[in-house]
Length: 135
Image (cartoon, rainbow, N blue to C red; front, top):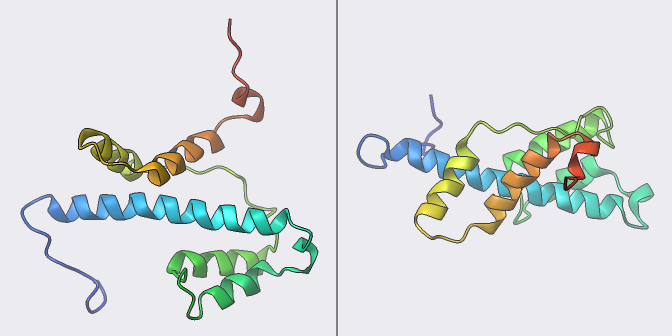
């Protein structure tokens, strides 16, 4: 079912799943970086002039940050330019957690994946719950 050159034999049982887990951890960081970039543009003095769908489109045409994730962002922006219909809530299926756990167990620095996972957790908290009170 994979496209040509879209698959690889990674080794013994479990190796392919492990590689896919790390792939998904990387995806967390990429999504976070895109979100931060669009937030920076939205907070700028140029925000009223910027069409985010067009920006995502042009970035996907030969830019070093082109990706399928950016194609999805372009499609979302074309339907709702400010994404006002999207709730800022992001679940996780476990791969980011497992990737970060592997990094911790093997003493490999992975701050982007770690921060991306923490931001997903934060997105699920109610605004009032973000202010922890010491009792």
